[in-house]
Image (cartoon, rainbow, N blue to C red; front, side):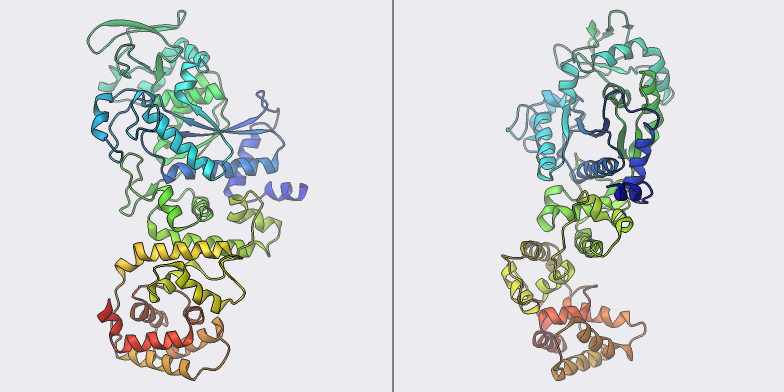
Length: 527
């Protein structure tokens, strides 16, 4: 354990760097609350999306790293802002027209358009918890509605009333002049309509713990700030939540980064030290637009898991969190293959290298062995040339390549074969475009075919790759043009696998037949 801790204290892996920052908070004395609190927030205005998964996965990685360098107990809280008013109707829910009359009501007061839960907020919270549980995250769930209504927020809300002018001064600096005229950190919830109101305050009575305001119809009302009658605007709420819970670490997207000084100041005004924060770059869809819960663009959690394992998704989340990432379907095969490359590398690494390996953080140090005998990208090409509709079609090739394996004793390989067939049919097949070879390519392909016909050596990747190289080396400059030709002419794709490995897996006779089809123009005419 001490060897791991020593290595963790100098590891350059970003979760360890963040964990050391958290530990530094308590180098003089342990936390009074008895534990270190990691928090992740969720705005349940729409269905959970893949960015939400990333936030929890990454926070868990930092917490696990912290557990390696400290004996202080930890907690991970997932906080849902479900008391927020519904500002607009999401476009990706059923019966959306029925929600218009509930605009501005807290999400936990809006009927569930899916008809399965007490409210829209409860439905979205359930979706969040479902996927957190599916991935085995260890967390405590807190609903803002419950937090406000049961009085757990009361102490901080009363302090916010007491420090109202000070907090308002922080907020007003960040607002345009016209917004300043009507802004208040407190948002009353109308006792009759149930709507969250954006109205200026006539009086904030810190001693009585009440606010007085005119509602939208000009009727003067006074409400206690406690008990869920009033909620905080989202920026003050952020800092107040840190103060109420004693949060030590929270990460959030770059779109929050300009607000960080505001959150910190409000937390300090309310009497608590702000947490360590980590700002990650945003996830983008195929058009470079930010992924949004309400519009449902990008790849959803369920969609990723239709084509690949949860571990590949966690690997994608680990990689360069401070770099913007396109979250589109074409990133999935690369993530799968790189994840397995790292698993294989882990077996031969020392403790320092292992702690820097993404798979240590994905599996919290309990790293499995990869039994992915064939790369995912190769399975996709195999599915392509065999026009596979079912994974059993791939197993014939796999078992000839690796006779000792089977679907029963290699479930990961079996799952990957199923994923590959699904991915091929949904994404590769519709875009497959074959072309005829030019004269030089035709000459090289004929040479490759003839050499494969004459070959009587072992059916091994390296030996076959040497033949492929030899056919292209004297003819193509750069050599990459030869491989591009192989992919475009034989596979109908712009890129592909290591071709010697592909021949070994697909079969020499099958490859010869494929080349003959291409030379005869049959692949183009069949497409």
